[in-house]
Amino acid sequence: MQKAVAIILSAACISLCACTAVTTGTQEEPASSLETSSVATPESPEHTITPAYIIPAAGDGDMQYNLYRDCKPAEDVFAIEEIPLPQTVADKPILPVTFLDEESVLIYMYKANTNTSDENLETIGCYNIKTGEYETWISANNEFGYTIQAINERYLVYRENSIRYTSNFLESEVPPSARLCVYDRNSKETCTVYEYPEEYIGSSISYEDGVALAENTLYFDTVHDSDGELKTAVYCTDLSTLDVAPYREDVQHPVFDGKELWVIAKEGNACVLVNTESSEKIPVPNDVAEIAIGDSIFFKLNRGTLENDELATSELVEAQSNQPIMTTQLSIDDLRLEEGYLVWASYADASVFLFDTQSDCFLCFESLPQGVHSLRFYQGYGLLQVGADGAAHYYRLSKK
Image (cartoon, rainbow, N blue to C red; front, top):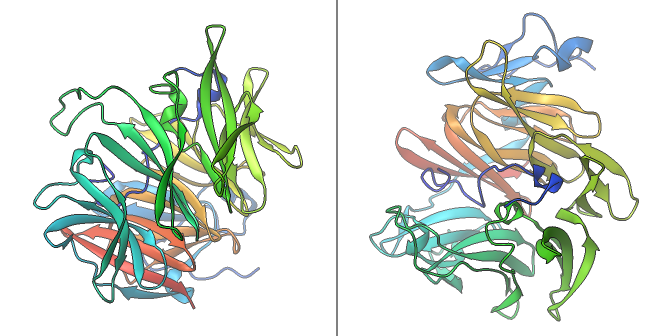
């Protein structure tokens, strides 16, 4: 679905619960499109139970986002500029990922006159909006799918997985394989960091984004067979030498908060998120689907169907306080905490909004069209993609 609406970065939402066993002051006026709760206001003590604001889905009054924090106009915080990003370059479809700087965008480029299926991917690279020039970083093999895992000023980390099924739902004849690779933006070279073992392919953690990039050091999780039982481990490598070494056993899903590394570990019959420096532990709920980490930590929980409802409910929870900030029955995934903003991909026609962790409030874009959307921040710029009225719209956000 992510590629169909052209708002992708990585795999769709999947449960992280595999760690239990590796199987395969003064209230501001709300933005005009929001509905305030008649029961609670943002500063009332009940606002963590009754929503303070409601953002309805367009054309469906029964579907909505329930917000448990204040909500303010995003236009007060961001300068917004629509950018002329084309749908194709030299007749080749493209999918943008994120800004690399003010004028350059990281994109997937597909073969001319094809769709954006994995087997049609031709290259990954840098497109300059101002000049229209394109620089290839990675040349794709159409027998593999490519997932960008992490990026910083020096490295782009991605994973190659052999394609199991084509866009026509035909099983591929390529033997299953997976490897972790890095593109060095300085030397313009691509190297293989790690060949995943056979036990990893198809295991439950192979569907996660189990990579953390901290300057020149890359942490990643894998599995190995120990007397017939699959065990998890986190490895690390210095990308300047590509030397790989075990980092910690019986843990998985490394995440970097900008200063320190966290991993998920088993503790009895439960899982905890562990800070590898301070040994601080945060319980991980059984129904967690995604984790976003930065200056705060957030869980996306799959709550299943609630009483008198037919649809599953997702809940965004601030991990340290265990307090919800949002619930919804609408589809969201790809949860990320970037430069102090909690963002996600949304697949409902609705207003674009995000959560500002520094101000502890939501920001809603009143001047933009409603639609499916995705937002990524990098290097001080936000790339907002909105699918509305049958067309894709792209916006550059910069803080005022």
